[in-house]
Image (cartoon, rainbow, N blue to C red; front, side, top):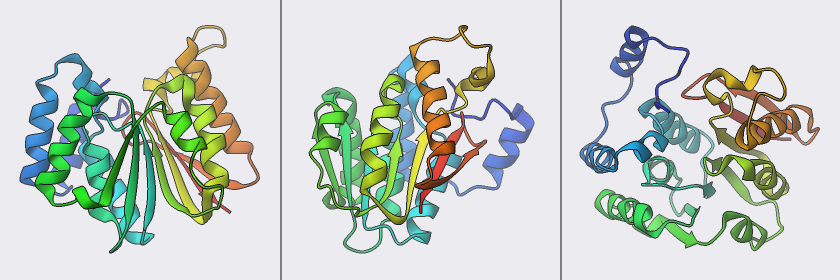
Length: 219
């Protein structure tokens, strides 16, 4: 799927891009290296989403962040660049080849010391985290059937005022298809959105940026 919101035509998408920060040289090189992968490059977040992540980290003075699904590193780079001094980001992924591109970007951007990559199934990494509510921000952009489980592990570990963001939660508009017309990914995304919207521990809204980002604030 394109990182551009399916709700925007090309004219509006270009307008948004023209009124967003110009990617730095490291990010531009990262985008180019990701594009060379071919079809998998569609998993990379867009520039507007990257700016949103950096801005939220800076606004919330994030010192403890977790990312589920790193791919080639654009979202992790954006988070790391917005961390407060001394902040740390734990990245969960299983693909050493794709995350090697991320490692290079972190190094080139001078943020490698802020990022810890854990190559293992994300659910195992999350369950091994301390039970204390200390996470300031978490970003989920991984295998969609795993979303509900990631939610249940992350929410109790968010501090009050902490943020949880999940990508692709409008699934290119298919989230409102008739029941039974979906697949495992679509069904999991529906369960994720329903859980986040009705969970009294959080305040949730769905942002129409990219392919939909469900944003939950820990109460």
